[in-house]
Amino acid sequence: MSPKLRLSLLTNEAISTYFADHVIKRIWQRAHDLDLVLRVSRRESLRRVLALHERVAIDMLRRNRETYLL
Image (cartoon, rainbow, N blue to C red; front, side, top):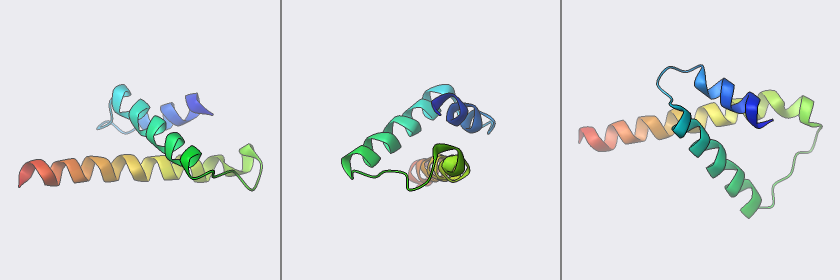
């Protein structure tokens, strides 16, 4: 699933490969820490997982912009 996640994040022009890898690593680590598991098959949950990663990446970029503009 990681290559699909990476490609999905890289379609956004504002996200670098380093940042995409960072987002994936942080979300996977957090899911592991919380013992989160998928309730449905990987195939069914792929769309939701991709959307989650995109929302987190965009939120991180927005927060960084707000921090450095102040």
